[in-house]
Length: 110
Image (tube, rainbow, N blue to C red; front, side, top):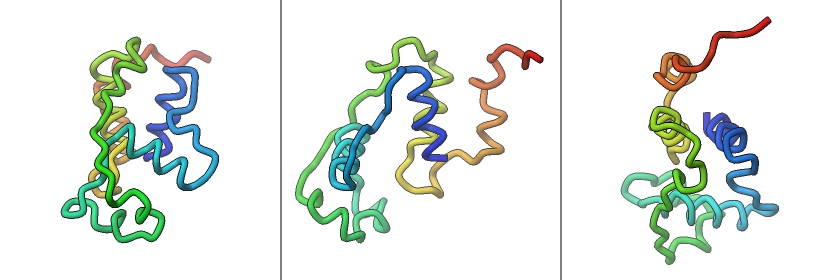
């Protein structure tokens, strides 16, 4: 579902959300955008070796809405539900299909 959030952002913004080319660059972009994961809440992320270079830095979340002003509040809410660090905190595919944002889209053509 994380990937669905990244694709939603790209469809609305016309560019990749996290355009990193290496693991470190990708993680840096994610943390600078969404804020640092908290060790008490995101233990699985913080325990990974790839997180070690970022452990001493504290990044504060950046409001993504500034980058995608055309996305309405329902779409923004759905995007944030996709972009939760822990899979258990993310919206499920079934929940996403019933989200208000998708209910406001025009009917299927063809």
